[in-house]
Length: 225
Image 1 (tube, rainbow, N blue to C red):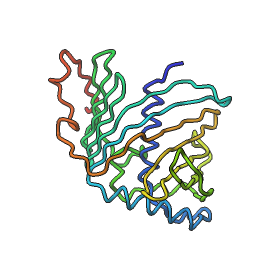
Image 2: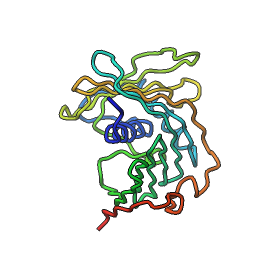
Image 3: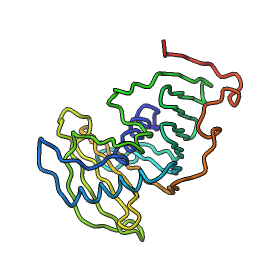
Image 4: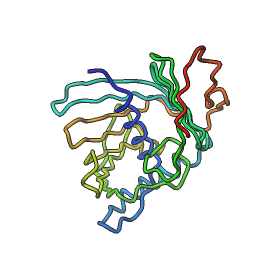
């Protein structure tokens, strides 16, 4: 089974939202104050960057641990602009509109960005965004390779969500995300690993803005009307 665009981008926006999440007290339950410290440090670290460039790998496994598919790529973020690049796929956004390019069909779909949407998108790295519908707790310290990390578990209070648990692995020294896992109620498990994250990277407009001239013969599907 190949990795589809549908689940890839759903996973990516979820992961970016968790990256940007700032710990807050939840009126529906009691949160762990130690986890709050870790999440606050992560949030403060990310918001200290004016830009971010990150490389990542993303894979999905079924409930038996069998690999269903994987992708690798990069993301560029500056303010409310972002560009996600993976094999055969590109997504650009300026905060108002989003361009989703599919190489196989040489087609770009343009949609409006809904500021009131519950969808979590990469530009929310730099806002005071937080998901009030999560409870969180600190599971303890672990090692990923040679890096010491804190494992923070997020649980949605809304049990109708398609996932029931998210695990964040946060570098204890650099206060950046090393890895993230989330678990679907249907049994699938998704893992996102950051292979490189550069804060205040020198990004150009060419890296962040969709330029039709770079895609000769591209067909535009404008859904903004």
